Image (spheres, rainbow, N blue to C red):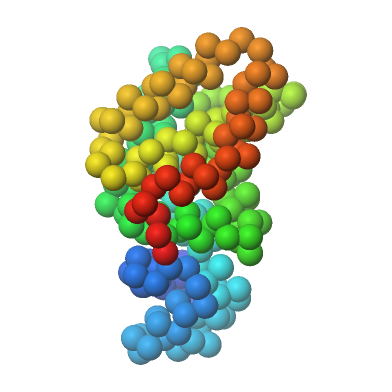
Length: 215
């Protein structure tokens, strides 16, 4: 089978998986549920996704970043200040995913489980790295890592706020403005990192505040 056909087949299976994830979450049943639809044999699914649902999850996360990059390449970010670029990119990503909130909630729930920690860490790093890249960051020194750690905190807070009940993009934009302003106003990099560390250490408590995040 040609490479393009294999790629399309993987995405076809991903789209089928997304429908099941909304109701059942990310788990070992996904491949069986897809196979039960009698469109694909389970051997074919495993052949394309050796790690089962985990491989499908990784494709979903990777594709979400690619979609963000494609959309951002169609807008002019050059004349904006860096904070404005970051804000624009994050809001654009949320706008792309506006119709998939249920799927994203299920995905975040799965990523918080210890068994998915490697996928979660890799995915978050890739997302944040892509945002900084799109925003024009070319740093290679200590700032490369600190910028990404700090933005990870801002990004995660914003996504969770957006997923909360009755949080539309307008309200989310105002919330994101406050988060970016808060970070920018702290002059000391150590204090910024302490703020981030405080957030990460209370990550699960922050998560539980949103009643809609139930598996």
